Length: 80
Image: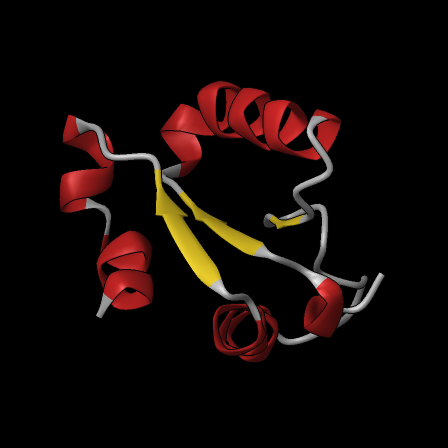
């Protein structure tokens, strides 16, 4: 599924991946399509480019906000 057909971009610290994937599964069980790394990054693709595309093409960003995500540079970049 391409990023263009996603509703929600899930932003999270890799230290909180269990929580992020639980949220993603919940949303998708309720027919809300999610974009989440690393699941939606094709092998060999540019992570930065794919994440930027995911953010730009999703209608909503859901931030899994924790103490870890609050200081994670990749999350800060995504939110910015």
